Image 1 (tube, rainbow, N blue to C red):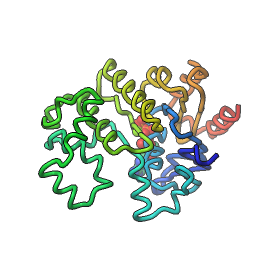
Image 2 (spheres, protein in one colour):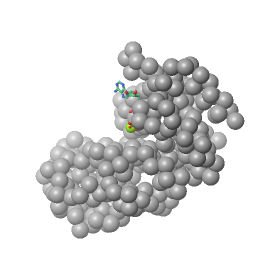
Image 3 (cartoon, rainbow, N blue to C red):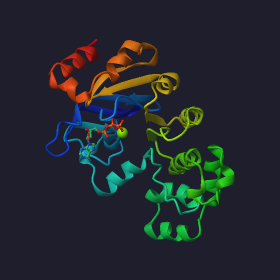
Image 4 (tube, rainbow, N blue to C red):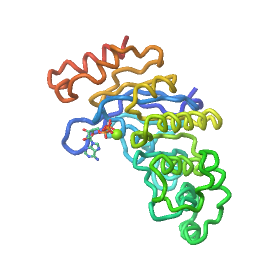
Length: 270
Ligand SMILES: Nc1ncnc2c1ncn2[C@@H]1O[C@H](COP(=O)(O)OP(=O)(O)OP(=O)(O)O)[C@@H](O)[C@H]1O
Ligand SMILES: [Mg+2]
């Protein structure tokens, strides 16, 4: 069964310095090709979780397996190979503004290019047709040679998606990919990500502030609060009461009475 599992987390905990745990006792299994939305208030631990899922952070304790591989055992080249199989789209795009779009898109390949090859490609893109195809897939093929900082926020987000297409990973993690665009464009971009994961059978995990988008486009929705999973349910089972509980109160207040995590564990056990 492990072969069909993309992610398997057991008791994952992450603590930064001497602070309260950013994630606590997290169990999670995601199948290959699955589409999952993560929702929850600011500071819930969503980005921290994504950074572990793309192997840029290691859990403080607990187990993290990706495609059956124990991540704690990966170092050097094997860790880099694992990272290359996971494409991340960030809210701030992480594009280089002054470069032409084609260069930003092709940088999705950096993981699999030699340093020399990558540098040479900055001077003259070696595979502009690859970049063009990815840009056409996200609807902005004509922007291939535009300067990235001359594009709108939504167009830049599409460039970031095109870059992940060029990377061709097994998993796409999108961390609040639509919080800087207007609602109708947000929906278009989410539809685009869902269509890409459908067509290519890539696993798709998205952190979203919009519960509407999460419930409309994702069959499975996970609610995170104060570092723990409040629920992990089919979208149809996420009730308004559950959403109210997710966003109610302040995370630190909820923790202060000591009962919050117990409530959560009861909830999860239901
Ligand atoms: N590098 C870091 N060093 C110290 N603390 C951190 C670090 N990264 C995250 N944290 C803390 O971990 C907790 C979870 O943060 P995280 O960014 O994962 O939340 P989030 O759910 O993504 O919130 P948002 O919706 O605002 O993006 C927060 O209390 C945050 O301050
Ligand atoms: Mg975040």
